[in-house]
Length: 271
Image 1: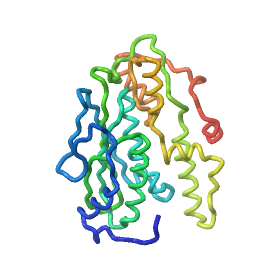
Image 2: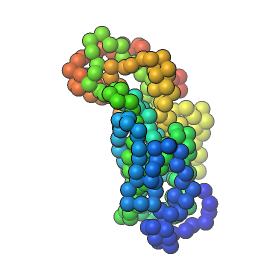
Image 3: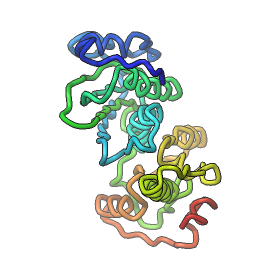
Image 4: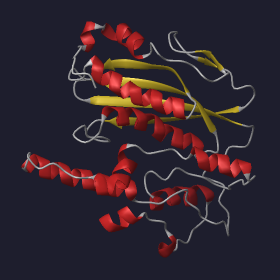
């Protein structure tokens, strides 16, 4: 990030929006109207629309002592796209809204948006709108993601049936342990500022919390192999709580074999 500091007040709300979206390019054929009007216009060509919203709040969901701003922007998009993929749908568009305190410069927001645009480009989604406002303290990022799915082909939480096999798309627990590691190193740094952490040996678990990746590949694989799950859910809040959601909405129970839960070696060592 540049050492130059430009106050947000120097641009004003509309100038800031123009600045942050000046390089915004649309990729989806269905994007009829994007940033710059009262609302965006999207044509999904007869498909069903899937919508989700997630919010990230400073000192609740992220700590800037160890969270790079570009990673934060990327993560804000990624966690929303994950919910779209969990419906067996394809994300197509996002809106991004920010509540910004005076400690954030235009250059800092540029860094956040570089992560937002990186995620949009990687997963082929269009940024089509949002809002900015002032915050008395800290930063709030709210993202709404929009996706599409063929008529009646979405997968909800409520379809699980007796004798279904429970599967996960990757290993579990790494992000939580990465967070615990970062919090531990933060505490050490605050007590002894001269001590610099060496996290290279724990790059995987740290990466899982700072830069999570939505599993677009899993949805593509399921479609290619004509596999239709009875139920799906994003498990970012943890396996047990998410399975409880499925069980409640499907009116079913489940049995988990602990020894079969996939855990990455770094996570196992950290635990």
